[in-house]
Image 1 (tube, rainbow, N blue to C red):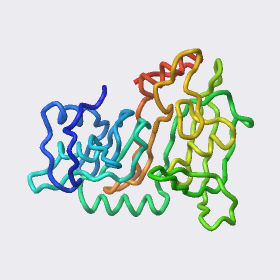
Image 2 (image 1 turned 120 degrees about the vertical axis):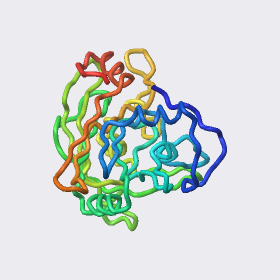
Image 3 (image 1 turned 90 degrees about the vertical axis):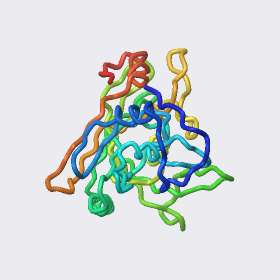
Length: 256
């Protein structure tokens, strides 16, 4: 399901937004878990987490579908790239937001991603530990691998394993242990296996003679301490567009 278009008029994110019935229904259709402290969503590809360079239709704006009479609404705990699908978490209350923010800073979140890449890495399982630095080019921001002694170097570590290998592509499970911008995309490009559909970092745009519709990266699971106690794991199945590309490579996966 593609997100409906909001009016193309920039609005500050903290100003109430009146959503149409269709937009409210769409926002509610994305919910995969809800309780008194949090709401988790299965974000579709093509929907930005928050605004940027005039982007108007965002998940952050759709949170007004869940606003209370007081004007308080859920707040994003983290982000996903626009073309990345999958689990994204919001906090319903300020105490929950503070708790989850501290937990994330304390590296108590465990994220699991699925990615489709051209070919299979060697070795099939391992850790990519290569520092990254931010590179601004006009209005665009990139991440680049760099030497550890570079003045802008940031530690970046990704664990990976290959789940399946098919005709010209492989399905990989990725577990980032740090949270740098574009970390998974740059790390996989660094080992010669950029993610399919990743225009920015050299991923293939076709597979089996057919186009790859977007970045083939999916946030499949998120495990974290719950504000009310214990730990919670939330999962989102691979979306249909990614499963269709996997099927071309004869990779057996289950679509949403």
